[in-house]
Length: 102
Picture 1 (cartoon, rainbow, N blue to C red):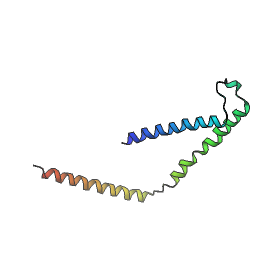
Picture 2 (picture 1 turned 45 degrees about the vertical axis):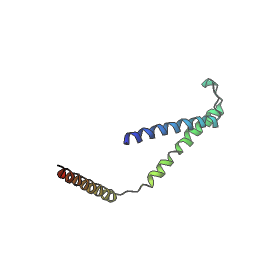
Picture 3 (picture 1 turned 135 degrees about the vertical axis):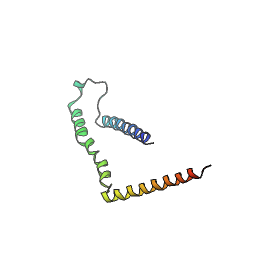
Picture 4 (picture 1 turned 30 degrees about the vertical axis):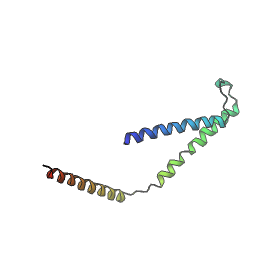
């Protein structure tokens, strides 16, 4: 299940990157079928502005999401304790069921 979620997130993020890249090329009016040396200087400047300034600003999205995830060591310890208790109760319940089988 974890690998499926990881694979999906990788595919989704690469798909979003491809779409954003295409939109950026359209917004800066990057000419198609032109040799790199023949691309106008103003288009290169717009590309530099978008890639150098706007794209790094997208990093603010995950940073803001991560900053809202507040967990302390004591909260983590409480969660671990609850999970360990749940695992113990499940294990002891299944051991009791195994003992009752003919």
